[in-house]
Length: 459
Image (cartoon, rainbow, N blue to C red; front, side, top):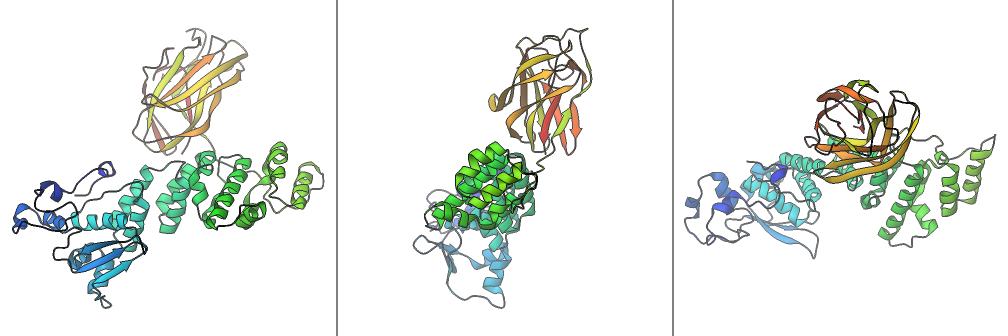
């Protein structure tokens, strides 16, 4: 039986749970009961007793680097049944006869996690060791364990770890995980590139990210994040993080930053005063902003395209005046769930039905009462039935099969448009939205009608 990701923490093997405590210790290092086989009904349970057990061990592994290794007993037959690499190692044409095998490039905890799967048919993964376990599973060709590691990483994927997981997925040649990472990095680039994980990526991954056309991010943030990476790289190389050394660490990647695509004020107050560019580069970029005859630059000059926002519209029509819908600082709210991971960037809202009016609006996105995103903004309604967009500072990641609460509180012109003929289920692109009423709604908004006609998202 294989555990799902929901069962990864705090589980013991069935064998350990059923075996009396006096028969063996927690590491299976010895068995004192001479008839221990009779305690277990299945071969899987009896195999589990052999996990990390010296009894009948015919090979030992010295796992981990010199000075921080662990000696692990093994049984060639069990290992060969669980891994084609172990089969070739012990029973192939070039079989090793050594009683002790050194494995300095695998972490002991990861090796034991792989061994536990082979012996016990159980998968136990932890956030701190899952990447090392994936490496071990790939090295010894244990595909089901590797797939479970990738699934675990996809489940825990966020802006904080997306860049470093992208780096690892490229190393491990995991295209599906890589695609998931790009989805997060594109939609939440400001958060992803400011994370500590971004500073841990290798140089090739740095270049790949800086080349990315679909990043939704200000170019000044790209520049600042690249400098942060260069400083950390200096520390990794044990050299002083001077301006010259930072520039040397960035190398050709510096010219992947689209400096001329910044606003001139951002360039003048930020990049130009950072000292990272040469005087000639700084002068040429200022000329590029202002001169009729523009100099040639090594930096890309066009802004990134970013992502095109998608809009889930939940009403089939709208109305006004006759039903006298009003905004009086009360909360309009609706609950929704998605069937695929998406990133909510903002809401579309109705405005005044009585001519031009200015609104102040507070928008929130919550899950089980926890605020995940919020913003306070203003917009001018022109008196038409147009929908006006209000954005969060950063897109908010929403997971499938979980209900979230979208809320808006408007102050401004009281009489307004409102939606009618609302739909419980709406499919837009690859994502299906389900809607239900929210107890937070105090101004009449529900599934059938009201405010928040659109959810703006990336997917």
